[in-house]
Image (tube, rainbow, N blue to C red; front, side):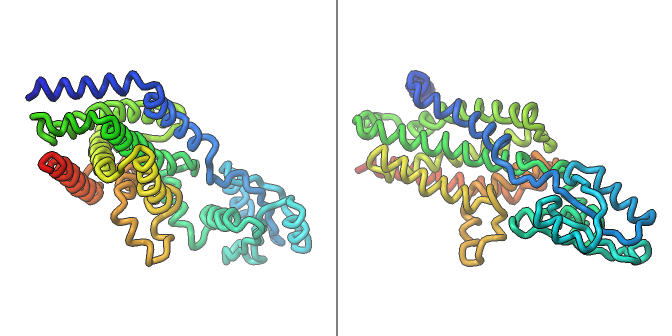
Length: 352
């Protein structure tokens, strides 16, 4: 049986390698997505033009301005008088104005006046300014400085892209390839052969698992050497956790292939049922806690959410596997359920 399994795996691998379209999707698109999200898609707010209105300019004022100038987040546009604040904001000479109280030297009181044309930029700018000067968001700013000193969007997007890419490669490609064999009749030949359904499933999964590991290596190299994303939690911890997620995505593709009747149906099901939830419910683009409470529960059943959370902890925060046991346990449980469902479906078709 081992010889038969290796023969099936070899047959699947040769089939993939001989298909240029599959190789394009598996090896080229992940690199393009990583570079695209790493360099061109950014939510960073940098080089904020800041002016300071300070009637009394003592040592405390000077130190505050020095703190603003020490970071690339701000560009100091000089001191202005109170009557000029509105004109500076309206003409774009400044995006924010820090108004320091007359008794700032002793009280530390200040006010931040912002250009509200871009609400998101205004809120981010306010958080940064209060973090540097002092205020309610200071603790948050310190936390961000520890894990992401330069506030790079790539640090946030790379773990999310990993979750999306592996679904693209494993789930979509696996489901489409199996449905293609169903349409050509070769799958029915396999199902009536003496080979157990579990061996068929494993032989289908191994080639895509190997290619996905190649993609993982390429992505980690690009993230570390090109995008400067740290791998603080250890490369082997990241690989081990990723293997669990890869097997889960492969099993999900198997389940989809058992339901879809055509390649188009498999592609649409994979894209709509898996890709869209990853984008909106996994935390890839925005925190799940920002969702309405009626939709928030959906995030708990999305595997990508737990994988992305774990990757951010392992890659950015530098924690060990003990800190991601919850995420790992949930992914392992979902993987076993999907594998059981895929195997049962194949067995039912064989017995039928």
